[in-house]
Length: 223
Image 1 (cartoon, rainbow, N blue to C red):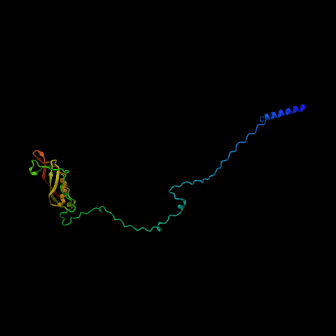
Image 2: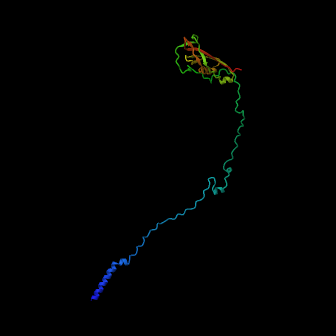
Image 3: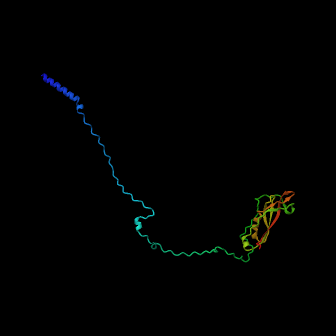
C-alpha cells in the first residue's frame, strides 16, 4: 500500500515537472513567413523605330512613280506679244513748234486776287506818296520772276509793271498789276515782288509807309 502511494506521488511529481519544463524541452516551431501577394504585370511590346528621312527626300513609293506629264493636263500656252525694243532715245520727247496764233494763253495762269499781303496782313495807317518823300525806298534784296514754261517754249517775251506799297519795315504790301503785255507773265511777277525787301522811304527823318512804288519786269530769252 505504501509502495503504491509512493509510486503515485512520484508519477504526479513527474507529470507536474514535465508540464513545467515542457516549453523548454520542446520549443514551439517557428511560424511560417507571411505570404507576399504577387503584383500582376502587363507586358507591352514596342515596335522598333524607323530611321528618319530628310524632308526633301520623297518616300520610296513616290520616287518610284513617274512624274505626270503636264502636257496632258494644261493647254499649251500661247506666245505673248513681243515686247518693244527700247532705244536710248525712246523716252525723248521732241520739241514741237508752237501752234499758230498763240496769243494770250490764260487757261493755266492763276493771278492772285484781292489784297496780296506779303508781310502777314500788317495794317498800314499813314502812307506817303512816293513824290512827297525826302528819301525814296531802295531795294536791298531782289528775286527775279520765273519765266513761264509755256512762254519760254513758245519763245514769247513780255513786260509787266507791278505797283505796291513799301511799309516802314521795308516789306512789300498789296502788290497789283499796273500794266502787262501778256497776262501769262503777271502771276510770276506778283510772286517775285512779294519776296523783295527794301530800305524804307523816309520823311522828316523817320521811316514811313510809301505808296505808288512801281517795279517793271522784263521777260526776254535774249540771244
